[in-house]
Length: 147
Image (cartoon, rainbow, N blue to C red; front, side, top):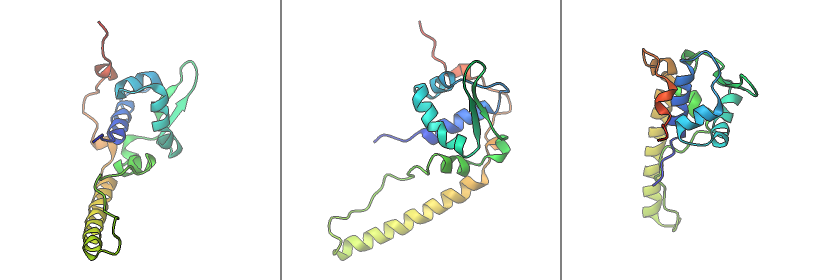
């Protein structure tokens, strides 16, 4: 099963942006995420719309934080990405008249709702500044060197 790593990838990028003063290009940030610049820009669009980042075009352009890391929670980033699915577990719906299926689905739905509520609560409590390393980590550690 493929995992959706957008949240982890974007958090990583935001923490790196929190360590620099100057804008960083889509090309550099996309390379650090292991994707291409167009995909990177689409991924970051929700964060720009939410006011977490800003971007500029042309010479000297690139991505920057629009607010300090202490003002951005994990929940805010999760929401800016469109609240990606947390769980890959789904309910059967082949026989909606089956009492067993209904009972199983109800129990699973309740458990998933509780787990999501806990996730949202915890993510609302954690701001990105608490995840930043004490010493700046250069983006260059992500750039693969060609031989």
